Length: 413
Image (cartoon, rainbow, N blue to C red; front, side, top):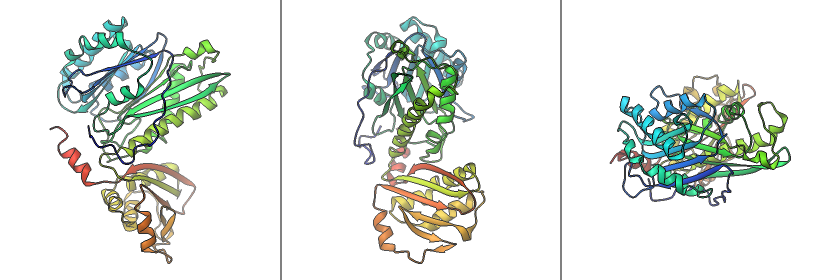
């Protein structure tokens, strides 16, 4: 975990309200380091529904396998998250660790292990000693409180430099409901269906099927549109929990994703996802620039996404941005290698609103000094107009600095 907070960290951290039916507690269990908060327990009232999306890695962690298998039940009573150890590529030992952790948690809260959801993040390939949870989870179950969202977000950090939280309040029917979210992730970010670890909690009375539908559609233009380094984690997990407690305030039960009453809630839900996803991009390991890639005029949205990701994951593009160099030639390279329809002589490229290239050549009005001054800003927007169709997309990333190499060069030490 870095001690220096990213210069791109949000200046305003929201006050996180209580979510009825959710209680939180954290502890230092010595998973990898001594005297570091590394365990989060979220207690959930009976009747809480759950949904999740996960990494598409073919080498998923034991915790990912555990959660996938338990989603079918549709209910959750607790979430246990540890940092410092990913419990990935740990064979039978990893599977046994998840079972033991769930058993310990279930006993601590008087529930069934199948309703305990687990997430682990940290070093890959090292066995997780689940006996360290024995006693700790029982103590956390007794001390859990409705507050402490920032502490909870801090407990799941690894190389993150700041805790990531977001919240929204919206009407469902005539009742106000709340949505709180937290996430962790700064490296190994090129997700597909989630990003590192993220958790959404609401008191809205939603069925697990509705939650699943919201998640599946919501991640596409939020967490799935963020990349730090092009590497997808073994542990990527996004879980959503709905306690249903707002039903007592008159919130209607939602059992169909097509229910028109969901319109405003969906917008707010997506907003929380988008907020957290941007915070992940802002906390990219060693990042000094937040980079927004916008593609217009592609043959389809799918094609635009592939081109945007080609640019966002290019080390040459990212290092040029770190060096505050508007090297549009590298953007041309990234467009060309994406394997998607593109016409060199129709391309137009802009940096922070200043067009630098058009119709297959440098823009006639290109001013090096003007563009160079813009590149010193903390947020850089690269816009590429392909001129082929109506497909468009947007992706967030960050620059690639020497600090990224330093962080990852001694990550296990």
